[in-house]
Length: 245
Image (cartoon, rainbow, N blue to C red):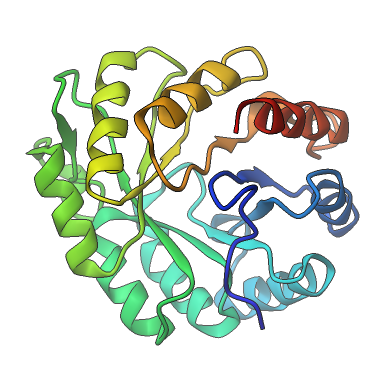
């Protein structure tokens, strides 16, 4: 099974939700495979039902699956690791403190694992207290470069920078992108990204020279009535990627 993300020009892909198996297949085709489809563990009552569902998504999308938490919920950290072990996906969304356990549980180095860090309001720092217990304590403001080193020590591949609020934390995001580029870590901007601000958010990371960029777009491109991702929006996003990369 292929555990490697199909990056566009080896640099950019999308992380979007799949509302159904049919929707997943349409999204995958519309994005020409340059996508991982988020299936959220929080939507399932137990591991077995989640694994069963994800295996169906795997078959339709050549394993372009992202095992997700669900709105960054730290309480899903253990389930994410356990499910990822079973299905061996291309991508895993994980809280900062869950990265090392997830890598060890996977038993291989190919699956791409992000580490959730949050804005602090201070350029040069991120909050790494995103785990089940640490998220209940005081914010842990850590220098970006130290956080990058910690992620790499744990076997992670990128920052999931969430919640961004679109460009609300622009200066912080620009700094993070520069450091990720310098220290060979990927960036996954997430939270408040829309068709309107996507290009600018992508361009900031490209200009900084980040080697792997995986923007997360969820609610903004979803049909609120059906819960499915809009296929036409996926085509527009791919056009923007092709124009800029």
